Length: 295
Length: 298
Ligand SMILES: Nc1nc2c(ncn2[C@@H]2O[C@H](COP(=O)(O)OP(=O)(O)OP(=O)(O)O)[C@@H](O)[C@H]2O)c(=O)[nH]1
Ligand SMILES: Nc1nc2c(ncn2[C@@H]2O[C@H](COP(=O)(O)OP(=O)(O)OP(=O)(O)O)[C@@H](O)[C@H]2O)c(=O)[nH]1
Ligand SMILES: [K+]
Ligand SMILES: [Mg+2]
Ligand SMILES: [Mg+2]
Image (cartoon, rainbow over all chains, first blue to last red; front, top):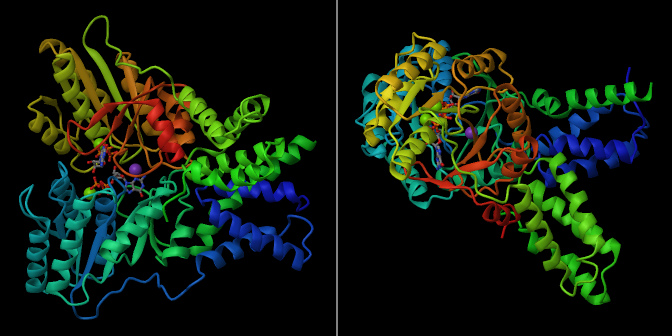
C-alpha cells in the first residue's frame, strides 16, 4: 500500500486538494484543526487509514446540526408542491424532468408548472421533458405572470387529484432585487392556495460554481425558505465542495445530485460517498506520484 | 456572508507595521498570505494563485513595499497591476475573415450561456459592424435548444438556420455554410450543445465541425461564477478545439469572477466580451482593470 508520514507537508497537500474542490478556506481550516487534533490524539503516524479519519471529520462538519433530513417532505393523500429556484443555467428545468420521472416511477401522479415565462424556449423545454416522462405541463403564454401560472397549476393539480406538483421558475441572479421579489411573490401565491406549501423549495446548484454558491444559498433562503439543494453536473470534474459550508452555516442539506442530462441521472445524496469523492482519489493519486518520484 | 476585499484583509497586518514603523520581510510574507486568501476566495485557481504570489512577492520584497510609507496600498497596487497585466492589457476585437463569411463557433459547458451569447453577438455584429449574420442551430441534444435560438432570432429579426434534431450537427453546419454563401451572409454564428470537457464523443463532434471550415473565432463561453475547475475546462476545450477567445457570462451577478484570471493564465487567450444580463444588448467588451478590481473586492 502507498502511504507516507503524516507531517506538515501532508497537511498542506490535503489543504490544497480540498481548496481545489471548492471547499473554501474557512471549512478547510476547520477541518485541518480537527484533523491535527485527531492525529495527535490517536497518535497517527502515517497515512494508512487516514482517509477514514478525514472523511469522518468532513462528515462531522457537514452534519454539525442534523435535524435536517434528506427525504422529500411528501404529504400523504394530499397535494405536495415542490418549487425549484436558482441562478441561471444551473439545471433547474432538467432536474425537474428527472425528479418527475423518479416520482412517477414511485407510483405518484405528477404535474409540472411552467413558471419560467421569461427565458426564450423555457416553456418548450419543460414541455419536452413532460412528454419524455409522460406527465402533463400546466403553462401559459411566454411573458405571462409566473405567479398566475402557479395559481392555475395548483387549481389544476387539485382538480385532478395529483399527488405532486413541481414548479419551474426562471433563473435569476441573487443580487437582482426585482427578480428576487418576483420569486417571493410566486412563493406567496403558492402558500396562499395551500397552507404549508411549497412543501419543498429546492435550490439547484451547479457543482462547477465556486464560492459564490454560499451567497446564492443565503439569498435564496431568505427569499423562499429553501429546504434542500440539488447539486447538479457532478458528472464533470468539479466537486462543488462549497455545499459543506452551506450545510454547516445555513443548515440546508443536499437532497439529490445530478449526474448527467438523461432522465435517470438523478440520485439521492450520499454524504459518505460524496465526502470521499472530495479528496480520496486525488489523495491516492498524489501519494502514487510521490512514490514514483522517490523510486 | 459577504467576503472581505483585499483592503480589509490587509488591515490587521498594516496596523502591526504602523506600530513598528518599518516593513520587514516577514510583514511582506504576512501580507502575501492575505493576498492568497483573497484570491482563493475570489475563485482564482490555487495553482494560478501560487505562481502569482511568487511573482508579486519578488516585486514586493525587491523594492516597492519595503521602502513604502503606505505598504498596504503599495501591495494592493502591485497586485492590481500584475492582475491587470495577466488578464491582457489591450482590448481584443473580433477577428473577421479576409474572405467572408466570418465563422464564429461557440463552445462551452452546459448552461454557460452559449445560446444567449450567440444572440447577443449577432445583435452586436449587426448594430456595430453593420454585418448580416446567420445564426446556426447546431444543438440537437438539449430539449428545445433550437426553439430557444429561433425565439432569440425572432426577437432580433435575424434568420436562424435549423434542420431539426434528426440531422447531425456536422451536417447542419455544412449546409449552413452553403446557405450563408447563397444568401450572402458575411458572418456565421454557430451555437453548439453544452458538453463536458471530458466527454470524448462530443469533443470529437466539435473537432469535426471545426474541420469543415477553419473558424475565424472559437469562443469559449464560461460562467463567471465558475470555481477552481475553470482551469480544467479551459485547458481541455483549448486542447481539443483551439479556442481563440473567451466570453465571460453572468458578470451582472455579484461573484468576484476569479475564473477570468485562471482561464487567461492557462490558455493565454484573450477574454473578448463579458455578458452583463439576459437581454440581447447585454454584451460588453472586457476591461482587465475593472476585472482586477472586482477580483480584489474593490
Ligand atoms: N452534465 C450535466 N448537465 C446537466 C445536468 N443538469 C443539467 N444539465 C444541463 O445544463 C444545462 C442547463 O440546464 P437547465 O435545466 O436548462 O438549467 P436551468 O437552471 O433551468 O436554466 P435557466 O432556466 O436558463 O436558468 C442543460 O444543457 C442541461 O442539459 C447534470 O447533472 N449534468
Ligand atoms: N444574468 C445573466 N444571465 C445570463 C447571461 N448569459 C446567459 N444567461 C442566462 O443563463 C442561462 C443559460 O444560458 P444559455 O444561453 O441557455 O446557456 P447555454 O450555454 O446555451 O446552455 P446549454 O445549451 O444548455 O449548454 C439562461 O437563463 C440565460 O438567460 C448573462 O450574461 N447574465
Ligand atoms: K453554469
Ligand atoms: Mg430553466
Ligand atoms: Mg444552448
